[in-house]
Length: 61
Image (cartoon, rainbow, N blue to C red; front, side, top):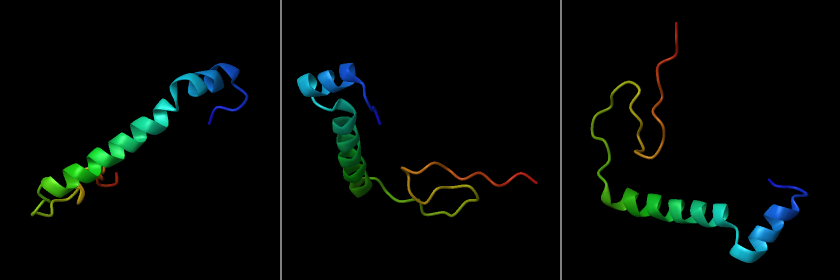
């Protein structure tokens, strides 16, 4: 992602790779919430089957 960026490399060395840590926590929270949130029971056009995925809107005609 960040190639040849000494400032970013130095920050990662000092503080850790924060974007990777945040993505890991977000994935963990998403898995935890998927276990406790109910799944949708109705199938509506454009409704997402997974509460964590963006809704799909009907294609323009």
